[in-house]
Length: 556
Image (cartoon, rainbow, N blue to C red; front, side, top):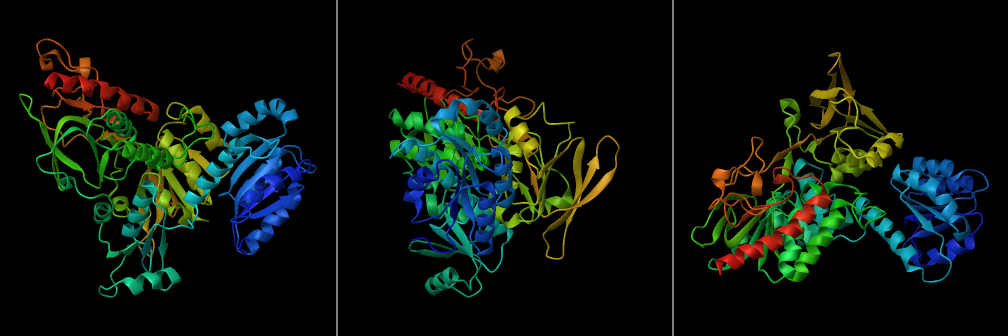
């Protein structure tokens, strides 16, 4: 039996309500199943649910309705509950005929999936799709199963940073007030001084957490947990898509492999709310889920991960000696090193806004704070796919999202499918030829306003906003590399034939992904000339492993 405030699955069908009722009966223990015969009835039932304090996780709608077109009905449902996932189903006899129009609408983000109405029992392909959508909804709503709990009287820059780290790590968690039932239960286990916020509770652990790194060390350990005399076959610096692919292929082929990540597994890709053009995921997949699946795959083959430890340097080995990878958590000896540290978002450089990072100003998509923005206005700065994905995700919660770009429009920087999705969303407005030049806090110390300047006319406009998300280009994270590893003028690492001839050994260029230091390779966004796409990064991660094998063979 569901509870009165259980999330609902609302099905809308005039022709096959019995089929949908039978198919969704398996979810009734955890969701409130509502079967309606028209768009208007669904609207009224949804209104009643919201008034009772419940919400809707999923709308499932047949195309042929008696009182509205599928487009009108879907727009109605999206307006009622923007956070709900939306599915259109077609019976077999009309599926092919309807697919063309619905495919274009799906690409524009008008709904999340177009599925064939099940024609029998145990249509597991149908339920895999439904399960993925409910899983995606649950990851962005308050999770019912919490592996970790954060206890604090109010949200702060630190609690938001901890929550963002856990979200990117794929760890279900929740934040609770000390006076809440969960908060009181944790305080009963706490043996330290009162007023130590935030407290972080996990099975068998209650700690006063003072930094994200402290939590990362507790969850993933330190690099110097490795025996000081052990020499690893491969040390991967950075666990974004490129590094994760290298970890999977290297460890599956028997190489002793570690991956050291400065922030959270997945890198910047892990903050993408939905990647729709990655091969093999027709309904899309969030960056967090994609990279966490890759991490689980690498762990299965034996890769060891150390998260929260920026690599501070590499001392190249000579005459076959191993390279020494340095971190504040200890050094690692490795026969080969793959650099996949990626890039970081370029800083805005406005002092008044830099002072508010974590208090309304965020570098990245700010997925963890999105639920705090219900009914608020948000500005996203950036014209790439990451900015578009952030705008679409934030629009599920915020009253309005303004996407600010210095160029005239998005056509030269964003994928067409995402431009269409941004354009269709009524909560998103694109401001071309515009930049953010100032901002400041309100009485609570949180971001309250920003100034937007038209780069053509010079006119400035002040906007009241609750969040500013900055995704404004990339700078390579390569300053820690030794001088022997050559880079281009922007700091991206040179590899293969892009290296100048004077850096070649014995007149021969390094292999395609090898740097100017033998046995040190570069992959993904940090590499000069890379495509800056998730698929190409994973391809380079897979490719580099064969080059690593070749180098190890040369070492004998």
